[in-house]
Length: 300
Image 1 (cartoon, rainbow, N blue to C red):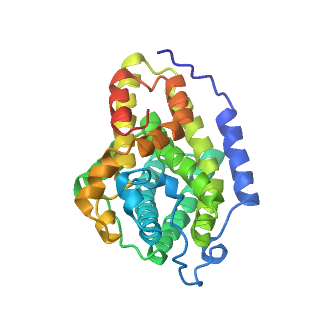
Image 2 (cartoon, rainbow, N blue to C red):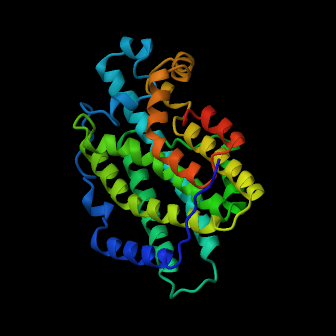
């Protein structure tokens, strides 16, 4: 598979300046722009029902509409909790990368702007999950431990491509949710804020990935591709916490079994990652070992 990573020259500098201008012109304050005061309306879903891990299964068909809405509220909170977990890793990766670098560089200033965005997003997701009536869906201890390792050792293209994977997967599903009038209004607002601001983060992550890969040899690409794929697997599989089914009042074991075999959900994940996989391929990061993890996570 041939990598086509272009020379960037001053592109990185120009991109950072554009992102800083965009941030100044269009950013949000979730503390005032999300409706936190109106009580939760349980007539709404927490996410587009088609994105539910049980949508299209026999279990879904047996559930009442109230049960489906309760389930999607817990699923939405679970995805948000995973988002918080990864955003905290992201902040550590970016801080380590720009530690003691030139603060007059627009890329340095953009990195701090992105970290500030992520702090607001994490608080927004936390408040949103609480309003949905869900508990904290923290990933498994093993995954949390792996996240600590990732935050401590990932660097360069492995760090930025992993950031991109997490952001791209969330972006696609949240674009659906924010337009869906079946979804509770405050969640739609949260998703809209995240989509708008994360579009800048994804642009930066793509540019940084290309920049760091310039001159990289085959062995380095093979190793980094594997690191990114392993991170992608852990991120995506953590999004639907196993405890959410019982908390939504369902039979946990049956729900887990049917969710695991849900071809509709797998197809939705695969289709949402088409653009991401094309980008990784263009960078030489879609190797055979990496494909193993993407397939296991139903991303390809």
